[in-house]
Length: 62
View 1 (cartoon, rainbow, N blue to C red):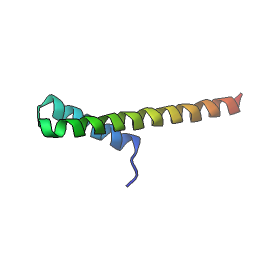
View 2 (cartoon, one colour):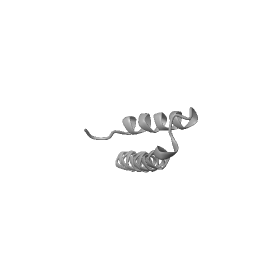
View 3 (cartoon, rainbow, N blue to C red):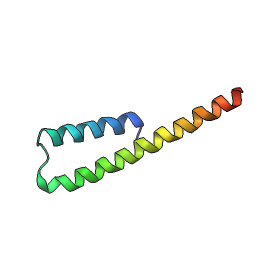
View 4 (cartoon, rainbow, N blue to C red):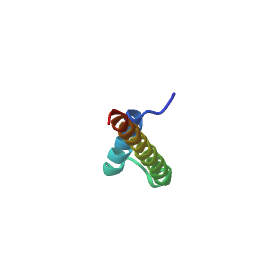
């Protein structure tokens, strides 16, 4: 299954909620924080890509 921005954001929100509620034990903490970092990078890259696409569209219109 391909990761989408929406699915990455949803997973990141779930990790954040689990951290806030203390649902992640110390043994799982490093794994979850690494996954969160990956998701943040993915979302940031996706947003940058979309931003470039939008800028390109506006340049074509002018």
